[in-house]
Length: 423
Image (tube, rainbow, N blue to C red):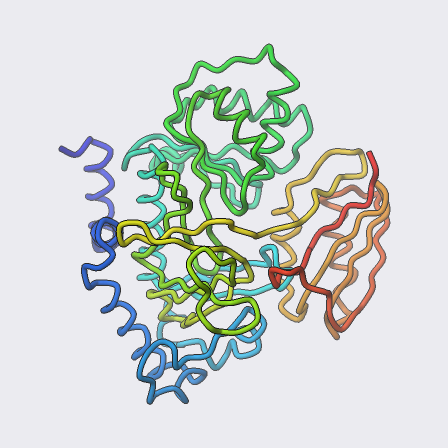
């Protein structure tokens, strides 16, 4: 039997969204329960046929026999062919949105999502929150940076409340702790670096106690430190389920409590693990490149997209899990007064510069920064400097260097922040 809040969700979805999220949620639940049910094959075939029909980038592959006739692509390739790959009749609709990211790769990128893709991503997140202990209607607190701010009325409506985490000094960590206690959620979600800061603060302040009863804690964006997992698990007496996602695709996988690793979102994605030095499949248990085909990426087809992470995989009872996930390796940067900053703050404005192929921020002292840019556009310095000072302080010193290539890590990602300060 549905709760009143669940009934309200379904009624509102029917009224404002033609019931699309609820329908997609049912499909997600069906496929995650039984990936062999046939729905995945239908969705994949729909995407491939759509891509060779409407995407100028993929039209040359119209004679394909299977997914493996399509090339493996990465962010740089898709960015170079943005116009050819965009399906305008979907991307230009008023109800489409653009998912922007500079992520951890240092390459600004924006991908259009049509309404169907947006609805499927929302359904997947609702399902993943259910897996982590929130049910389909439990109160969630999400720790975010300021640019994500939503009106309180919208937070009440969705039962997802925001705790803002722009800066991670002790004063703000204490505020976050108090707000979480006041909101009394059953699920706490936050990026790994925010949860790292909160856990460190709790360790240094053993006098703090909790009165809330969490069903789960979900770190996102990257793997959380084991010390952080242990601290939060013991403080809140709740399991920690790490979530794996990227902005341009959405939810990829989440730990499901079985101990098998990250359960893949097989309802929306076809995931391959390819060898490091070729596009051949890696063996089960072998670390390789994570390559994703997004069934619902019709406005901008993403077929065999190498997202720049490494992982191994295994199959348990017909369900695919990722293990040994190797992702982001960026340093925390500090404001000129020594306050740690959330990386999302500079990623947020950098992804607007689409003429920048790569970037890297190096902090040598509290006041001295270097911005390395892979671009031929030298007109951005004043705008970038202004935004950097808003984050790090008016008394910062910023110099620019221009290069043809920023070296990549073994995973294929570019390290976008480097802190050389010795504390």
